[in-house]
Length: 90
Image 1 (cartoon, rainbow, N blue to C red):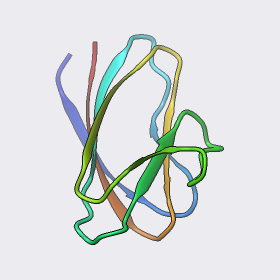
Image 2 (image 1 turned 90 degrees about the horizontal axis):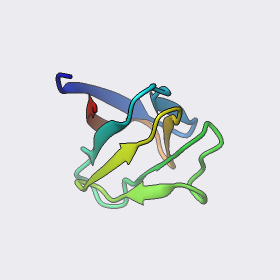
Image 3 (image 1 turned 180 degrees about the horizontal axis):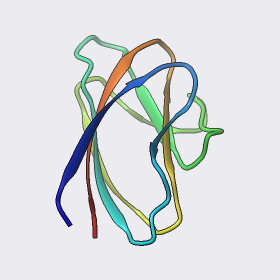
Image 4 (image 1 turned 45 degrees about the vertical axis):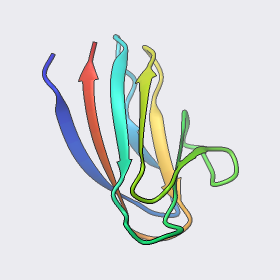
């Protein structure tokens, strides 16, 4: 399968980054914000919060494999945080 990319504006309401797929998905998340303390948190449901999610520091990248049937959501503690995503269905 080809690589795909997307950009998301993440705010204080959770946004779905990846809907459930039938195959595993390799995902690279990049917090494209360069200002300090512009974190983005991610997790497996719309209930993800800044307390329960895993976070990505500003200008950092995180890679994971999302298993079949799981979704990925993101949230931040501010408005319009840039999240760049690249993925490939395996």
